[in-house]
Amino acid sequence: MTYKSNKTGWRYFLIAMPFMIYVTAFYFVPLFGWIYSFYNYNPALSFSQLQFVGFDNFMKMYNEWSEIYRVLKNTLAMSVLSILVTPLPLVAAIMLNEVKHDKFKRFIQTVTTLPNFISWIVVFALTFAVFSNEGLYYTLLRNLHLDVPVIGIMGNNGATWFFQLGLSVWKGIGWTMIIYIAAIAGIDNEQYEAARIDGAGKFGLMRHITIPGLAPTFFVLLLLQISNLLNNGFDQYFVFYNSLVADKIEVLDFYIYKVGWLVSDYSYATVLGMVKSLLGIALLFAVNYLSRKTKGESLL
View 1: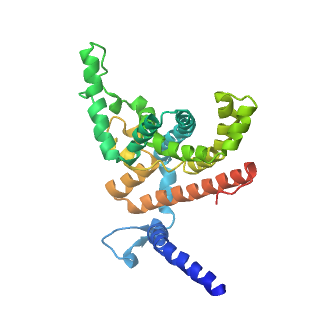
View 2: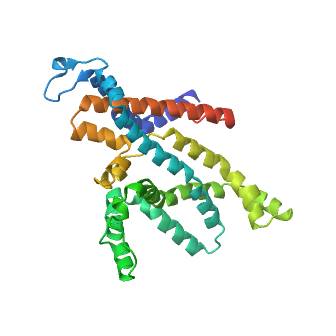
View 3: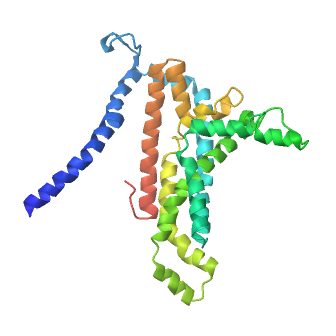
């Protein structure tokens, strides 16, 4: 029994080994690079030749607070807007669950899930074809003799946050909806039967069975999203960046890339990345504490 148990344990260990190597190589080994935040890094010099500057790069972050504040404001604004639309996939999943025509249901699922697999570069190409000044949308407005703004929505500074939010929702709603549809499938049918016997209609079933059944999944996804407040991603904002919307589209990940690769201030970029990671870890533990207090379950 002991031999069999050990054999099974080793088998699981060997299966997990590639993933452990991957996580160690790409998530833990790079952490040693944080040491460059205390040096004036120059790729042409060896480590022993680098100038030790202590906390100068951290003080630089303090001195450039106005720039950091602008980037943080963009990051938090887009994250908070994303959190506000978190119920959308849940509502869409509940509505789709009520569709009785299986082919139509599968068609909607496929159409809404497909954008998740499209790269942001392709999304930009499609968006440019539709929303650029010479694109389909504004051409249609001109043909209808309607007013066309001089600057299209892709260059509209005031609409940047909402435009990017719309693109994110379009790209991700189908994927998240799959999670909720799977959760609905896991709800015990006997609960629905019992509710029907008690006289519950369609909306009664949604209110008393489906929504409470989806609440744990919704809560976990919401908490994970809150813990990722500072992680907006990079690809989307990189491809949609232009000089007209530069001050509204620069989120933290994009700003770190700009400082590191475009300005070539590698040490300062390391400091920004380090602080972002530490704040992200603090947020994750805070959300985990919130989960324990409200649900009695730990996410970690």
